[in-house]
Length: 277
Image (tube, helix red, strand yellow):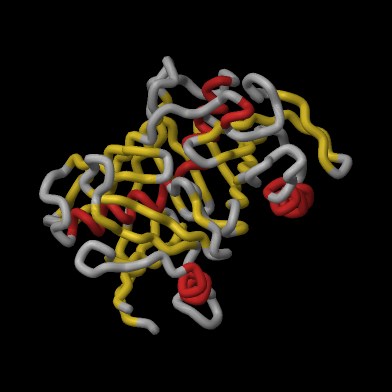
């Protein structure tokens, strides 16, 4: 099968084209191709599919462990680049159907090729049961304890769940608790992505443990959720682009003061293409 490799801030994906050819979601193949020792190597597989529900194109994403994610911020930028560069869409602003519904992409080009993409990620979800977490109301700056470690945390969904702390719990606890929190189903019924953050000079620095992909170099929805939580806690302003640093690079995130939308802008880069069984 022909595939294209993309990365956004180091969050890397194998993309397959289900518009030019008919494709079924093949989970075992996705797991195999994502393996970094015996496959191509990726955090997930992006399926570019014909548009649904009035959208120009559709995105489905299968994580490296075979689970399907509702959304992926870095992945959607890569898919938008491919759809534009290969002529599946002819305009610079277009709609993508995802697991969280219709999202709008705006592409910015250099020499006829997409370099950066801005996505209107829609409104953040803050009601605890809708994130979902086992908590009534907003879980914002709330005390939390797990395995003897106490900190304050925030639960935000961008179509997929995120658990965010700005407390310094120490590097050893970060590495230990990332996978523990992801799978802590007593509080996270659909598991969760986990963001360990700090704010310095108006910039947010994020380390992320992704649901279904483990430690990754970047998480676009995580950057959006973290910036939303930071704004709600008064750590960064609303209605202003905020630089968010992830291990693989920078994103710019803007949170509407009325919480009607979150804008994410960042790079999307082609790496290589190939064929695999």
